[in-house]
Image (cartoon, rainbow, N blue to C red):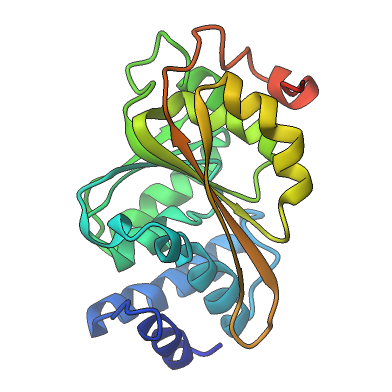
Length: 242
């Protein structure tokens, strides 16, 4: 998917990118490849693949949640790595107020330079573990309209890392590479325990490659009990299961 095909594929979804936004994506690609020489940011480096599997893929949550395109939402991206999905979303929808949490300081340093060079505002970068970032002692707890996570962990684990950050009435969006039926089944108890329910499960295929993607949207309907998230490492080792 070359840049022009990327622009057209988004236009097909009623997402129109300006020339300036296209320049930001071009610079993003350039800085990603440069940064990848020092840091292990991505195994996907060919331009067409980055535009399809990182940039386009990162914007797919807006197909499921239209308010991302227009509203001044507070969005938190957990384990964003090289900035996916939050920074492509931010470029496409400048109305978003983005906070990125990542446990590796080197990645945060890369993202700081990236955000500055892309000229993005309203982006906060936090070096922290999701488990401590979402703890009852942290003011960020239950303060975000939307929390996203892409390719971080299984849904039963992700729910414990992300749902404590979502305010009541907000949404958690998990970007999954394939069908998520089995993960959803295993995560049922965790989702309920943490104060949410399943709003929608949208399946799509990436243009050109026809690779499957699943966007899982959870609604936060009540406060997460204070005992969650548990201390770092525990959610992954002992997921909440029924």
